[in-house]
Amino acid sequence: MPNISTAVDAYNLASMQTIVPISGFDEERLRPPFHLRFAKNEAFTGIGMDKPMLQTERMLVLTDEKQVLCIYPYRDSDHSKIALQTQNAVIIGYGAPGISQEQLKEAVEITLEYIKRVSGGEKETLKIFTKST
Image (cartoon, rainbow, N blue to C red; front, side):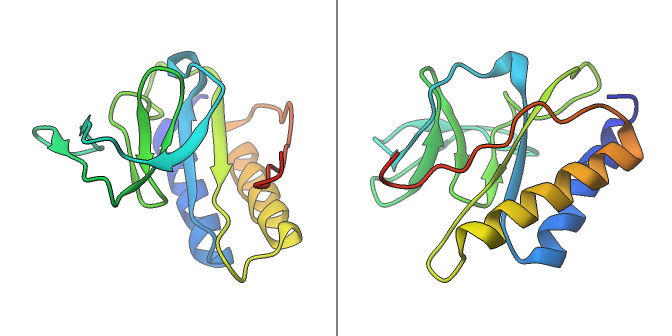
């Protein structure tokens, strides 16, 4: 990605326009599969935080096999953030009650189009996951 700040701005703009929370992660720092679950009193350092915070069991989190990626759906991990050295990104749109699968897909498509406009690159895959998959 040639210009990382504009890529992040692009997905934040798409999130504001579609009212769908969206995250972006550096693919090289991820260890799929992903899990949506309640925190287990884990330490988490979000983007811009000086020190880790302890997550309570009432916090919903997105994780991979090694770490918490975000506090669902608003605070992304500093460890897996998109940065200047990022070559491949994973974009995640978060569903919630009242958001259809079509709205979710459209929000991610808009995000990918904005990122492509400002940073180049190509879309590789688009997947929609539901509680039954």
